[in-house]
Image (cartoon, rainbow, N blue to C red; front, top):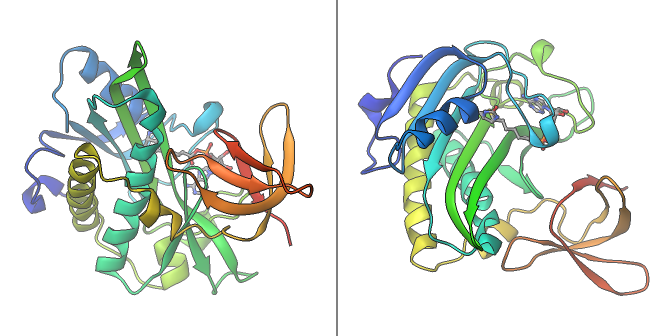
Length: 263
Ligand code: BT5
């Protein structure tokens, strides 16, 4: 990928940025750099990943040179409970950057999906166009290190989109126009720096994040390994847990799981 650093307007996020043709996972490479003392803001970008990961060791797939695949290192002195703010910041940074560079309107699906309404697909619907993988290290009950991994389907042609339980799309497939990946990356890193600094000063990203939640006031099914809960998604609480009202009227604060929209 053309050097994104030339266009970078940040002070510390993306400084330095390590650009690679092919890695196993940008999160893993950044974890190794972090272990040898890399500063906060260090970023790893890859044109291709051979072992890109989602949560719970799921695969993250993207054909070479069509997506943004990168990880950013943070060293926040935040309570562990606040970790989800980083996932929220990443979602908001992607939305702001994409909306600066294109007329596309994006949304969010709890806990880590960037969504795009794909009216050009076989079934017009909200589709996953980006995902976030946050991996943290704790010291007592505080965050010591956080690796924020971001995958964004920029120019993946429709026929090469991965299939999964949540339908996938790309900015190209839904918008009909290829975008410049280095410029988009530079913009995401800039938005991320601004949003992180606000959060670090105590300003929660949650209200802005909540306003983009596509499941708000919709019937949802939330599942983890052991439980399934059905109800109405009300939004998120200040720590980013999903609030779901069940049929009996009880409101559950969900910390982890997967959401599907019910019709
Ligand atoms: C995620 O996990 O959505 C987090 C994805 C994070 C990927 C980035 S890329 C840079 C960095 N380095 C890494 O190794 N990872 C991060 P999850 O919510 O568990 O969703 C994973 C599921 O999304 C998979 O099981 C597939 O069903 C689906 N999927 C895989 N690739 C996709 C894609 N390109 N677009 C949409 N959906 C995809």
